[in-house]
Length: 331
Image (cartoon, rainbow, N blue to C red; front, side, top):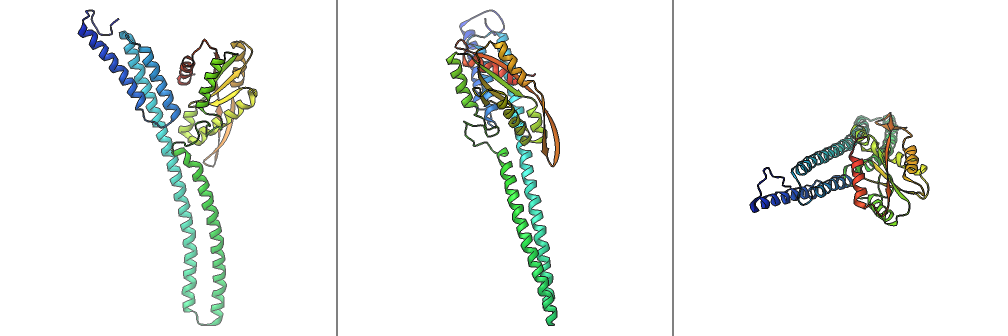
């Protein structure tokens, strides 16, 4: 069926239709290829959604398919751009925090040094005006006390500088692209999404009672926006630790993309049993207390989960498509 209005067909019309379809596919490909890369996981998710739209179009789409693909493409681009905006705002927030930290420290160091320098200048002036030996001895005592304070202040400044450097080193990874190994997630310490994909493919090919459980930690984006990425990362760390404790030693747990964790389970059971087991783990709502800007914040944590049966009859792309739909959907 033609997606162009009207029913009369001709070679010119067919060529125009084919050209428009190719143009639309090229636009989708360009969106995926030239998207701004701020977060590797978000970029992969966006590219997968565009690839899915391209597959849905096929070679000869009808009008409804073209309109649906266009609308879905626009929505995917809007969602991805909002993610970029959140990422940039988060980077800006962390950078401002580092600048404020350095400014405060430099101000403290300058103030302390100025006090010591003023005291030395005062002693120097008194020494110039002193004639009697007693006055000079008194100034010597004052000088010794002043130098003692300088030494103490120098030690305090060294401790302050060391503390500042540690804080800056802790904050700096938030404002640069992570240079960590792709095989390990720097936030949770779990194996990353590349190894997760390899294990997922292997489990599908093995076809021996494997299941994939995708856990989505709720409200991570909101926590990042309100309290900074340190808070969101801490929530992911705590959830990863909790899941690792509750899953068996044979289960494989990975950091997936965004706020998601992926577990590959080996069970000699039907999917209903595995869903019940995993849902019982995920449904235990917890609350975590974090120290943010010298104040205690209590954050409720909720985890959503979905389970997929892995077998040779299910392709990797089909499983990945379902995971993308779950990750981007509302729960």
